[in-house]
Length: 256
Image 1 (tube, rainbow, N blue to C red):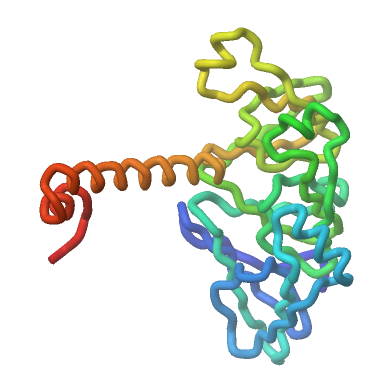
Image 2: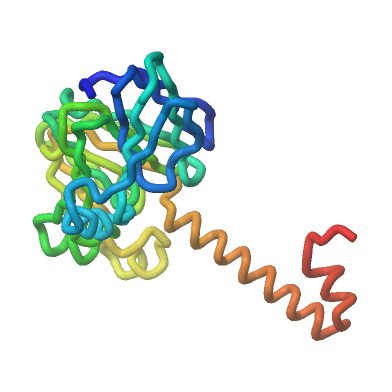
C-alpha cells in the first residue's frame, strides 16, 4: 500500500484506531489486536519473512505471527485495532522521522504495509543491564505510518542538539534514532534506597523526538498485584476470626 493511509483515533483512555483501506490495500498488526473489520476485509496470518523474523519479534515482546488485513472488495473498507490497556495510541509517520523509530518492547500496535518491526539492541552495556527494557528494543523501519501504544498520559519532547532529559526508565516509550540513550545512577544512598524512583534513570540526549508515558505497564501490573494480594489477606484474616460467613462479609464484593 502507499505511504499514506486514512485513519481516526476513537476514544479517550481506552482508544482504538480505525483505518480506512482502499481496494487491495492492507495493514499489518500484531496477532490479537483487531477489534472489528468490515465484511470485505480478509485476514492473512504469517511470520512475515519466515521463522527467524518471527523469533526476532518474540524477543521484542510481540507475537511470533503477524496478521495482514486486506481490502478484497471494490469500495473502501475499515478495520479497527484496540489498545491493550489504558493509555493513548500514537501515530508515527516514519518518512518524516528519517525512516525509523525506536520503541520500547510491546509498544507496536499496527502499521501500513511496507513498515517492518525489527529488533534493535542498545549499544551501551549500562543501558542494556539497567535501562528497564534490557538490551532489546523495537525498531520500526519504513516510509509509512505506524501506530504505537503507551500507558496513561503521553508527553512529547523535542530535544535540541546536546539537550539532555532524564526520565524514569519505565516511562520511556519511543525516541528518534538520533537521540542518544544511556542510563545514569540516581546518586546518593538515601535517594537510591528510599526515593521510590528506582536506582537508575534513562538519560536522553538530543537532537530528536522523545515520547514519554505516565503509566508504564509494569507499574500498573504492580499496583494490581498489590491490591489483589491485600484483598486475599483481608479474606484470610476475616475467615480466621469468624469463619466463612465473616470472611464473605468483609473480604469481597459479592452480590447475593
